[in-house]
Image (cartoon, rainbow, N blue to C red; front, side):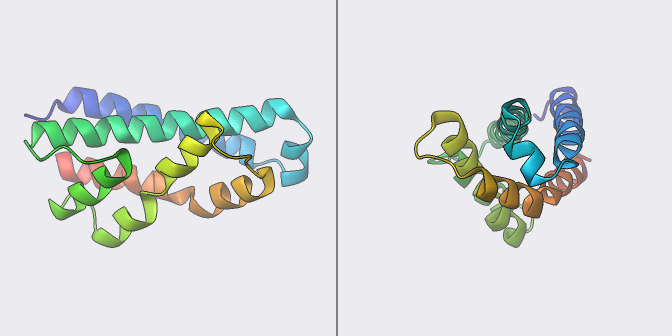
Length: 138
């Protein structure tokens, strides 16, 4: 059974983090690039948003007694197959997990300019995720 209170709390967290991220993204790339505090804030907010999204995905997967996905990215596609998200949206948003991993684990050096371009281009996906999950849980 879906714990609606848990999901609603996580959705509120994502909304608050996304609002904070919008404040950071209000600065130019040059201003963010010149200020390591703004850089780290953007990175951390992305991590918090993605971690909360994955937490929700895994909760829904367990509650709906679905097969455990191979990785966190796959959780989006699995939920799309169950009708929680449109397949196109799941395919578009899932790679944010890889971006989060590159930032957090420093797998490779992350180009701040590219990071900011991706973040600016795809930040509306966070709001769409909120809308879709709310719709899914009723």
